[in-house]
Image (cartoon, rainbow, N blue to C red; front, side):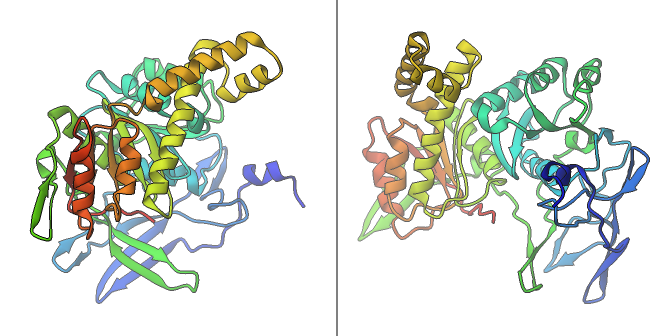
Length: 425
C-alpha cells in the first residue's frame, strides 16, 4: 500500500470525458471539464471526497434552462466552476473536490450577506464561523475565527470584500488551506504567499453576489443505484427583517402570539438565517452582534442539535479565554493542570467560571432553526442559555406550545416564523 500521506499529494488519474450534455425535453445543457496547468502539469481535480475517488469538475458552458416558468442559472454565470489559472494566484497543487465545494458553499451563504463586509470559515462543507461587520472584512473575519477557533484549523476562508492587511495577518497567524476573496489589497499577497501550501483564489464575482442571489440553479443529487434526483435549489425568502412572519398559532380556540424581535434581534436573526442556508440538517445557529456563537449540524433530533450546539459553545468559549491568556488550547491547559501545574489549574478554573457566567457566550444571543420545533423541549433547551429571540419555520402542530414557551420566559423571548424550511442534506 502506498504511503497514506502521499495519497493526499498525488493527483488521481480520471477518465471522465472532456464534455458532457444533458437534454431536458429539447433544451440542451453542455458542460466542459475543467483542468489547470499547475507546475507544468495539466490536470483536473486531484481527487474527489477521498483520495481513492477519481473526480472531475464541469462548468456549464452552453444552455439556458426554464422549468415551470422559473429561469435557472445558465451559462456564463460560473464562479467556482469557472476558475482558471489566473484566478489561482497560488495553487500549491491541483485542487481537490472538498477545497472547491467549501468555497462554493461560502458563495452560497455570502449571496445573502452582500449588504455588509462578511467572512466565513468553512470546514467539511459547513461553516464553523461566520460574521458580518460594518467595520470591515478584517473585523468580520476576526469574529468568525473566534466563534470557533478550534474548528477553523485547516479551514477555508471566504470573504465578500477585498482582503485587507489586517485580515491577511489573521490568516497568517493560523493554519488555513484556502482563502478566497474578490481581490487583495496591496501587501496582502506578499504576506499570504509565505504559506506555500495555502491556496489563494481571486474570484471577482464574490463582490457582485447581489445579482447572484435569488436565482436558483439545477440541483442534481445522485442515488447509490445510479439514479438522479433533480430539484430547484433552495432560495432564501428572508431577505430583510420585514420578511419574517409574526409567530401566531391557535389551539382549541386559544390564539397565542409571540413578542416581536427588537431591531437588533431581527438583524441577528436575518444574519443567522442567511448562514443557515449553508448548514447541514438538522441544524441550529446561535448568533450575537452579527457573528455566530455556535453552530449545531447534522443531528437527527432538534433538541439534541440545540444541546450539542450549546455544549460546543461552552467548550469553544473557554478555549478562547484560555488561548488569549496563555497561547495554549483548552486541551493543552487541561493536560498541564492534570499533571499538577497549579498555575495552569488556576487559569483553567477562572476560565470555566467566566464561561458559566457568560453561558458559553450564548447569553443575549438569538437562535435560528432550519426546521420547526416538533416539541417545545428544543425551545426550552435553548432558553436555558439566556437567548433573547428565535426564528423558525413554523408549521408544527405544536407551534402554540413553542410560542407559549417563549412567552413564559422571564424576560420574554421573541419568536418569528420564516415560512420556509432550510434543510440541506
